[in-house]
Length: 312
Image 1: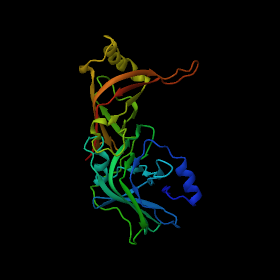
Image 2: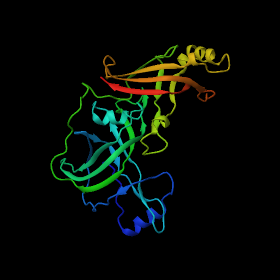
Image 3: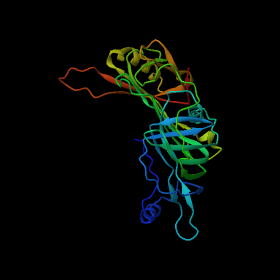
Image 4: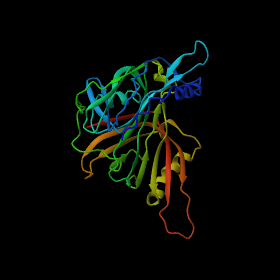
């Protein structure tokens, strides 16, 4: 069931929440409160640029008192949601506007529907800016777990209304022929064996000051991690030792990595991930248990300068 924490059940709860709100880190905007809602939401979808896509989870922007006392202003926190990249559509383009450093204000709406997909509630926003994108960890042991993206966006205004009736259904976008999971992938770009990569941690992309239109230069890319089984330790450590020999990381030692997102047969590529300008940050071996047979594991961590994802 989709989460949509939004309303305070009583005025007392509202006042308690606003009194406890932090006076920093919130964008100040206009907030329009909506009516109480008495239905169970089984489905949530996002409407964007004339297209509709379903979400697995969504939290509505909070209305918070930024400064107390007379003349205090109310502000808005961010929306947050989780989305399975099952199709190339306007939502994915908007999400990727942050890592591509092409952030753009976008208007849209969240629509909640019952189990029959009848729209019951609608939450609209204006001038939304993507402020955070967390890509999932790719892991060969996670079976059919879908490729989910967690993202946040900062609105300028929020308004609440009834659903307006009608059915909610996905529309627009270009669907791949098969579902994308986190367990089927292939890495390229490492000057050593990569067939024993068991997991890849993709970077968090974020902007520290939410809501700034000129925030392109402040976009931050988190680290990327590569987890290996011990069978490839010798070959990979030879690469690591070559980087460590002179005690510094030079420009020509930065790597560009490519990740193919594959179908369940591992024969067809459904999407490509590019990680550009990656510099080795650390090499770490997992603890080794004495008197126990187990395969050694180790992790390489890289900084990331640029990131992109495209579905085919």
